[in-house]
Image 1: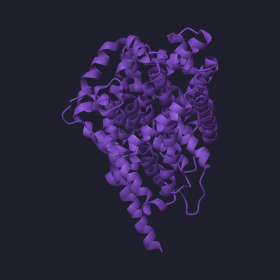
Image 2 (image 1 turned 90 degrees about the vertical axis):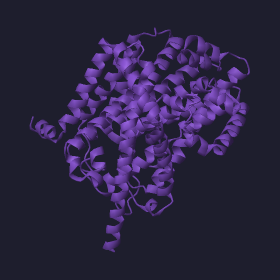
Image 3 (image 1 turned 60 degrees about the vertical axis):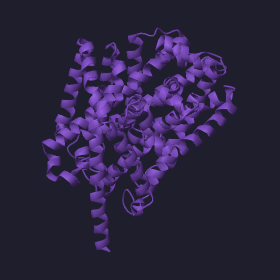
Image 4 (image 1 turned 90 degrees about the horizontal axis):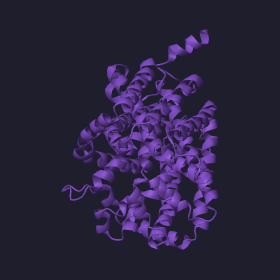
Length: 508
């Protein structure tokens, strides 16, 4: 009992109770007033998704430039730990954890289906071959890992170099706001960060879990019902809870398994799908188009609003990354101990970006080949049903031994969701403490508290008809204050790191 009381005193109770209460209230509204909730979200979205479009695009581009600057300047040599310290994990183990924490199963869902929307957009059609330019944008949207890595570097510097015992967003901006980090402002920042994490998780799961249940129905005949979905969510929760209980070693093990299964599935489609030549040649062409139009893709905001493509997709993806950037970078910072800033940013890009490009080059181009060569009219099926999950099942069923392919896809998506959730639960656990030294880890009961809490919002969304259509709006709304936080964290980092270099210079 005394040990429990001692642990309880260490906890920052408002950070645990307030988000829990707010999520409970949101869930309650989703259950009791789904239409009103959706209407409210839709009503406030235009300000965030249209009026503030420039903010999202500017922050993403700025973080890309900052990533390059940090990597190739004097800052790149700074070791995120003690001088001469070796990296905590091997490149593979570190890369696998980072990739899985940042991707979830969304990368598979959108890998199969994103082109369905883009290829029918007037804006994309005006650029040239819509199938090629669909992937140009997919490659770009899903390669924004520089946002995670810049912020991950900021957190790693705070934790492993400055040895801060308060491991939260409010602490990351202490160099700018000083004592206010310990006051009301700091508390509001940390509560918002926790809420943004839960929103990002809900968006991801609500898109990807129906794919798994559809595949289960196709493979085993399991009814695609709310009960099946909830059972699946509980299974995912159990898997990542077991991983979480074993700390970083458990997360590393599960992440490695996830990457291996992911690569097996990609190889299955590439080798056995019969479209290897088409996939390679299309990818080669699409990458050329991407590099040729890179800065246009970064900065095209469509000031005249001749189409809604930028606001519907460019703004959404930047906001989506910024929402996830509240949690993933902290985890990257924790596992990057012993690496230099240059190794963290360039190594992270070298592992994650090819993984994303590989997914879309194989899955999207294979799916497009089915449409182009008139095997199945996937666009018509999608337009008639409005259901991307059915389209994915149709695509996988064109592969040799489709039941094997479906099984591998199911395992891969479950692993991706589990590996994202264990890292997110761990991050929230760190947030829950008033102070936590560099060598301390959160108590297992605190980790399990977050493991359970993170699953509640997705469960509520299942029973809220029409809410899934507003998930993009939720991401855009949370991305706005997320963008402000990101700017503050990066500005604080540069102030702190310059002070650190000056201190090092004077100590010589």
